[in-house]
Image 1: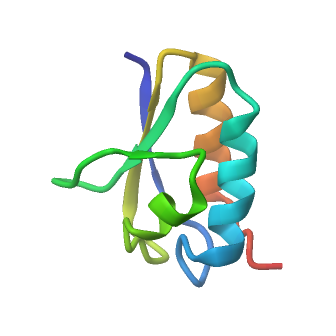
Image 2: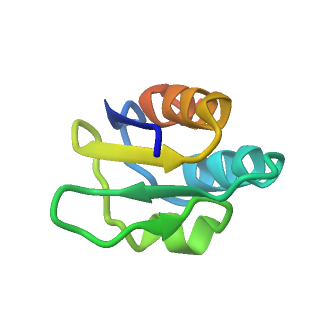
Image 3: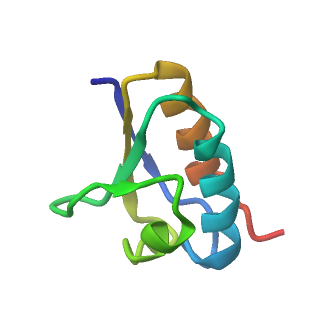
Length: 85
């Protein structure tokens, strides 16, 4: 399964606004997309609440996984971006 590990770029981490933006984008793909932190269980990237349960802060590693490589690339780009603005 394609995956990519990126560093969280939002200064507030994956909290409300960044999580909502990522979840909305993940929901657009037909394939399931998951996010996980090292040693943690994967969560559904189309759920902002589940993304927030990761507790990922700015600078933390997050792995994006999906059967769809374009979904992995798109969501990984959002995780790495500063979505606080």
